Image (cartoon, rainbow, N blue to C red; front, side):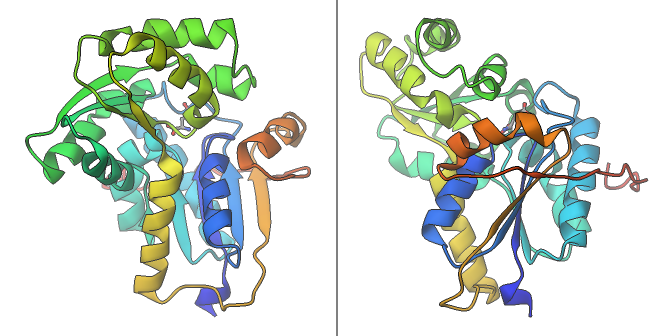
Length: 280
Ligand code: DGL
């Protein structure tokens, strides 16, 4: 039965587990298959067609495992591949950008919203576009922060180095009226304390930090309800983690990102398929 099938969640690496954590808290009865495409991380510095191909290949694996819905828990993949994934698969595919943009639009008092993300997410312009569609009066300031992903993947989350990196990246916000900052990459919540500390020091006003997890989880709950796909009540959800590179490197960090103990992930190979030009 479709409603007892698992939900597929995918990211380039461990970052999407920050979204899984929120989903598990809100929907403990749902089983989740998490796929971290660790053999190809980072997606954030790659071109649009490459990210689209990787995303199609990764989600094919989730489809083959019988998922009832897919959450693209990666801003870069959402920015470049969401429409192609929604066209390709018959199960619902949810991205992270629209839910967070809506939450930020609702939260901001000044109407000035900061967005930080990978090079791909920022250069795609997906957040200014989503915010503009919600309310053309909203202003956004975007900053690519490519060093944040390797810092998070290394578990180098606090102290002088991440704070110095954050200080340099976030400096352009000082002269703006930004009161809300979208952490537009699922790796960034791990650096939240360092980012918040730097902003508290340098911004004249308090800046609210919004990440992909909460807003995407609320959108997922609404989607499952709308489609009649909620797992039967009383079931107990199981989390399965799959990675495309050696799982050994994944184990210690994954528990930190997910907020629960995750044993050794299962290694899977993703096959590069021929996708039609219309999808790429
Ligand atoms: N976690 C991914 C995102 O939300 C990016 C990490 C990467 O560069 O692969 O964009």
